[in-house]
Image (cartoon, rainbow, N blue to C red; front, top):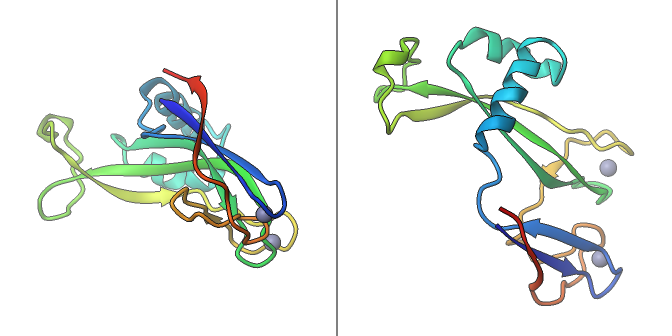
Length: 148
Ligand SMILES: [Zn+2]
Ligand SMILES: [Zn+2]
């Protein structure tokens, strides 16, 4: 993956982000799901993780923004996905799982603003407005870092 950064022309806020999906990264996702089931991490997701034995977890770190006070901070984006058949019904039998199994979102982690308690939203890199002050970002720039 290639890294990019944006800098706000008004307040200097800089956001680094990477292109491409950071989640469904197998080892991290499997480990996270185990930790959720063991009660070590993200207790709000335990119910969904326990209910569906062949659930999958997606894990990523993304920038969350408070829509009220504009606090911006990177948080874990953790989602629990369950395989479903064509009718949208939960598939409990792994043998029925086809290569192109569809997934449905069963549960996800909610982040609340540390300052005002408002539910934070995921800031998308396509929104070329500063998450902190609403100012204009400079052009997209590559920082030369390549992660694999
Ligand atoms: Zn700004
Ligand atoms: Zn806030």
